[in-house]
Image (cartoon, rainbow, N blue to C red; front, side, top):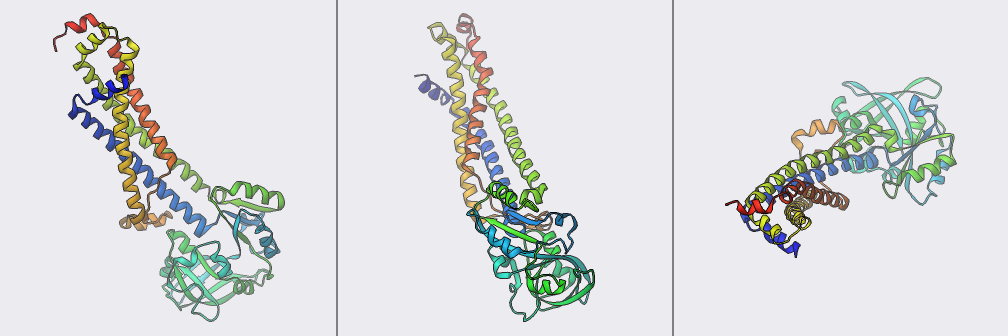
Length: 406
């Protein structure tokens, strides 16, 4: 009975109830959609790091990431690659030869990291081949093809089929050079990556460095699923203790920190919205109690105990919060579903976003867990907001309340 009475009570003043429900709905809508936007933003960056730049796990010689010296290589990457592929969690593996070099066109030069890859094998690990915006992925050039980033191409003032010269240090310390021709130009969401990474065929780079045909500096490992890095990492570390095996969050610790801080920021933002809504609910319920002093006094005079009065006020507040919360969540989910298809175009800030590694088109996304968390927070806000008005109600003196002329 107390439930039905509480529900009817909130519609006694329909206008006031609709105003507070609308305020709650708008606040929850803003909070949920902001979470979806920020989650989509972060998830896109993580997907870019994993599928374009780093992969889930990388393997190097113990000191390689400190020195980046060409002689700090893994002696037999092909055998190691085959052993790693035996893990059921591993989807694909690609080995690379890497060298820091100077790259020059007829106009100017720049320092880059030259990465030697097997083009077909690399397709299984990274989506670089899908990022080519001009030319082709190692096609259209007979010998020594190179694929460079759009930012680097602009810096060197070159285009497809332009000739560029690479100056590099061989294994024995001798400085040598080689000519390459641009086969393709790629563009990712990270302009720093585009400017610093150039890709050639692994055999071409091995010949230039005079390095063993089975040697390599890096093995990139792509897993079937995200969040499976730790068990695979532990297994590989126990099998190859002499190698440095790191997951992507260890290679880019700032990404892990950014993800954690973004999650914290999301819930701080939602907390601020709910706090503001809480004050609005408290104010509304105090007005309700002020208008119903005589009625509440009569209910207590005829025998309704304080617990039931308290429960009635709390339920009225929770019903208001839940109604507004459900409307807000549904509206936010509808908008999230729509913009997840089309994306939010932030191209006016593309240069700044790309410099930080973020795409200019954001696809909002939200998980079931986040919706449940927001729903629980809305209910808690309603309950907490009801405590003060409900306490005021149960402390009314029935005799005095009945004498009040409303």
